[in-house]
Image 1: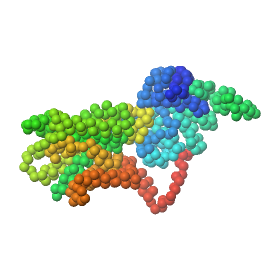
Image 2: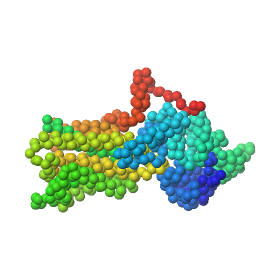
Image 3: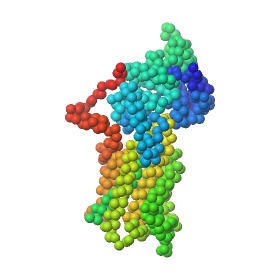
Image 4: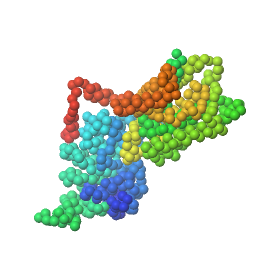
Length: 266
Length: 339
């Protein structure tokens, strides 16, 4: 297996607060990598850097052999990095199906002149896209909401719609920022199944999650971050047993008897 | 009778303007308070291009070219579009919507002051006059001429609405709406935001220029005092009342607000102190705007009525209003997690 993403010594700071601190790791092609860690560990910041929304202060990001460190979000999307958002973001006043169709690229009818004067050029593509979007929505259990405005969807439905939208863009690397946050358990099981099926098609997935049950069912590999650095990486079972992980999650001196949990990190 | 044709002509001309503004604000979310500046530019250019070189001493303007009126009209539109493109690349590309609004207000007033005081280019506050009738002969009565202009304005308005409809139904229109809703997400899917917006700015300004051209052919004169920057606010009010994002709404707004509330009152008997009539009109428009925003925030014709995969939505809407569904809280069964 080859490495599709190589993150080298990447640092990022919000003002003075260092969010990502010389963080390095690689993501293997075609695998589901989980990114976990306590709040403020820099997970979301890292996703934003990968998606091109934030520029790292130092370090480089290599994607598929090219240096994408300086790429903006649009350029990142064009090389195949597609993401969902931590708080599902939808085009609220557009129907769900339009929300999904928009993600496909390139669309010849998106040029102003062709849109106005050369309908014949894009009518066929439009029909194909509509079919594909309908199938995707069906696959994710949203078939009864295709024509509803996206703003009327519930939280869980928005997450599913975001996934459909991301898949419509045919990504090489899919970044899922907390796909199961605030989602009904049944739906989160559906998301887990779908994530695995997507990975089987050869899409590399990096996802942030806090739910260990969800992670254990989808992630091949887990990267644990704390205070902007990679703590450990490996399969979930090994990682879970790791002392430092327990420390990072629960505090400095958790012992079997529970003693000292109160004065953690004194 | 003349009252009716006069109102219809002005209605069509304002309709073109509001439909153009709808492309910018309704479709793409670009708040443009300088819209009437583009109308003025289109009007001026169309006017001076049809006029011959200045013969009256003390009247100066540029481009007295004696061009046939269709060419002059188109060039007026093009001039407005070019000005729009230039302003766009200086401002809109760098600013987000709220700041853009402030800059466009400033731009509108700057342009108006330049036009109002630059005697060489625009003949200052006196403007231009005696623009020839587009029919060539001047022996038509005002009524006959207004009917001819009405036909022209109606055709142009129909073309603009047709173009709006095309754009709305195309992937390009969808992209614009997406950008309006959330620029960041559109960018995250590989779109260069400013390119689409620039196109819409150009097309909208072109329509503004056309409207201005027809207007100057109709009243055969042009002066800065007829193109006050404040008119942009009336156009925007018309768009919001009619239904921003919906081209039918834009037309309706133009007819209701600009015609019904603004122009019609020139023909109704005055009451109270006549010098307050203008203020009273603005007051009425303000009140109507507030009422619409309170009770019908999406305008009289909301954008979603254009939903072109419409049937299902319309069926759902019909079901919602069916008496059998008149309950306060209706829970939708969860559809997710099906095998």
